[in-house]
Image (cartoon, rainbow, N blue to C red; front, top):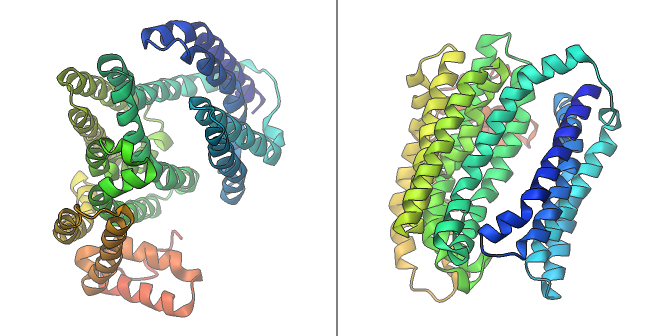
Length: 435
């Protein structure tokens, strides 16, 4: 652990120095020299985030998920909410966003280190370094490829289409990433240590993975449909009327939301098994796809084409990862693909109602009213579909997992979830022992 902390802290310092040196050339390349001081602030955060990375990994390994959540709460509230809004009102402009993010990361890092103080110790052992380097070098390369895939589209849009287009695209992308961070990142953080502890019991490991995947699909596929239909009022309310042009971009990005979220879960078996070369190959294809798609869409001058191309690259990464995950779980790829059936049926049924409603309500002056109508319709139709035909619209794996999670709920809720699981074809208590 001492070696890990020393190594990541050193890498964080090196990354900070490189960004400091590159700050001015990058700012000049974007035609905005005032960005250089902002990049210096971002560079200063690199060692801070690196210092807390080992603490985060240690808390995850100990299954201290409550502590992890609590460590992020003060920064999330005080940084972007209190500080950023306060500074924006005072006229600090772009600095209000940056300083809010900086304070958020500082508070989160401090909380993590306080909860796992044994993670922050310097030390060096050659053998431990060799072991870490063998595994960590590949993971670092995967991380850099993922970073390219997550940021190359913004870079190319800003360079080829200008800062106005970059603002529209980046705000739409940021809006799409909110459910990804809330749902997918939290789920991956829990799944990795949980599934790691099960990997020697293949039937239990496979059942846990399939149940988690089916449950995420059951929730996120309909959510994608709802957000696609809500994109226009959502952008107007979240970003303001001046950002209405970002709605069309957000609509395309929301359409691929389910693949971006569930794709993170699909990568967990690859990380657990140490399939480093496979991960590098998949993320290289993903990053290259994003670069090519973003460059093509930006050259055509259409942000929707950029979003569509990036979504297709995400879909390709999703399919490649799911095929490899099926091999590691010793099951057929067709089996994992079949888990999408109930979620796709639910999404199609929901779209038949929400799409016409969205088009009919588009003329409403009140974005709140339009958002409320679509949300109310979705909140009514989705439970009705699950209750009417749980086998078709929910599936046995998702229904069984919901029943297992609801064991601590009040008796009426437990009874309802158990009934759904049984009607969906899930023999409660048989495949749910992993919980």
